[in-house]
Length: 531
Ligand code: FDA
Image (cartoon, rainbow, N blue to C red; front, side, top):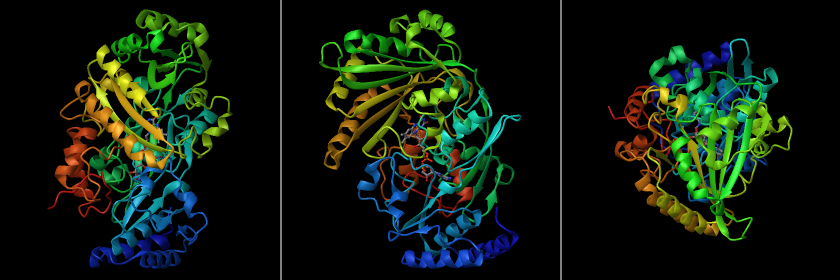
């Protein structure tokens, strides 16, 4: 936390800002920003070795991203990256950016699908990289955690597991995803049918607003606190920390990954899955991965349907549930593996041969970070007929790098009203579709993107409409396309209604109140209404 000296100083600079306005022209460049920041840091006794320009050897590694596509497009890279250790340094970055008319991009784990935390269509801009704000403190008596935004999910899971075998947290499966973007935008994982999503567990937060003020839940008020639990942090300020409630899981859980190909009735099995996935015992989450593959029996191209699942209990208890509700899969005792909840995270991240320490490694796993990627999402409220599934297989077989994930909803997700938090995807959804395509040759980008757009367009007949819903954390700039860096209300309402349904209007009201000058913005940020 900032010293009294620093606070006095910051009060003075923000008073200055209010008096003289933030209207400085965009002509000011990075040199001015650097000078401003260095000046602020000297006055507040802050470090100056947290500013990186392209001349620094580590600049490139700081920009290394999970997905090569955003940085390969026409979007610009920043000339400055700031990696603060102290709140006063973040406040100074906000102050200097406002004074000089620079945009800020906030990066926690850097997994944004469109790279909005580290690229921008509008220049000039700087990155505030929150990697040094990454402490995790568990209170096992209170069953809560204080998690700074630069921590990764893996680090949170690891730290919980050091305290208890039965405490857990319901968030995503990729250990290198950052808390900052993930928690503020939702956060679905393998225990979400029983325990809902990460943002539903936030009970307090610390955020710095556009005036540099440090706010907690009480001082920010319930409207802003509501907005950052699913509406994304980036439109409202820089989040420093979340306090979340932990959940209780059994000491032993059961996992399995059963794959069926078209020759093994995958089409009929997937069809049946849609009738039970959201209704079966909420301790059981059967996630479905669909990929083109070679048939192990015939060698022909086929579709592999992998039912990757977690049951919060023992093998002996899940087998009869599967036999009653989903005998078509033919689950056997040999398919099931019992382990602790934290070990299951290694299983789902495909790193089960490694020790738990790998969870604190921030290096992307499984090819992420070395390839180009485009993702999209949809919600399904009525089962897709067999003919439709066959058409989907035809699409998947066209592209080697294609994959679909069907993530089941239902369970406790149904018990929240659509407006309880900005995340509106509750009762009525059977599952969410994640469309993905990955490739390694830059020259193929347009063809691969055209392919995924073609599939998405075909799927319109099978998914939710008016609005066609999408998951905010699977950010997709194709929705209400606007790459100009300024978000008009009409453009924004296309993706706003997809991600947030009617909650979009409340998000706009909150934004207009807390950041009327629209300082915190990106290509898909909540717009502020002109007064
Ligand atoms: P990043 O740092 O890129 O931030 C994402 C957005 O949040 C940006 O707009 C950024 O400006 C903003 N932001 C970040 N920190 C902020 C802060 N401190 N204050 C204000 N704004 C801030 N999702 C899911 O629900 N379940 C899953 O299992 C997975 N799995 C998964 C795997 C992989 C490989 C990827 C690439 C992504 C996922 N996701 C996911 C999606 C993930 O939840 C989503 O991309 C998150 O926004 C990532 O958060 P990061 O902090 O890592 O991203």
